[in-house]
Length: 134
Image (cartoon, rainbow, N blue to C red; front, side, top):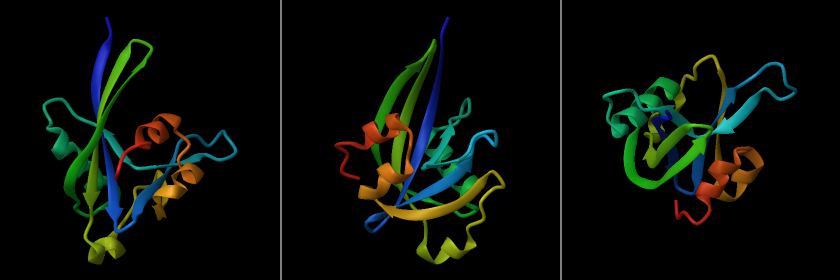
């Protein structure tokens, strides 16, 4: 029998730029970091909106705000079904100097949409973003 879980993605936008964070994945490879949006699994009994706000707070140490739901996705990995919700979010500009990333995150960067392919390696994410207005 297969499993199903829900993930949420927080795409933080300011003007024409988006916040990417660099997460450590494996120190046994030449480049052990990957750039990504804020992303987390929804805990059992947790509302997806609460999960994305929790993830922003946990990863950036500041509070975020949901602006809108941008898109949903669904994919299968073996017998596991992942359902996802991508939110456009914001953080207060005056709070950015208070960002403290957890140990497994190297840095953050604001990038323009046309730069996504130079940072984001996950083809599923890049394909999901095609056609989205953001």
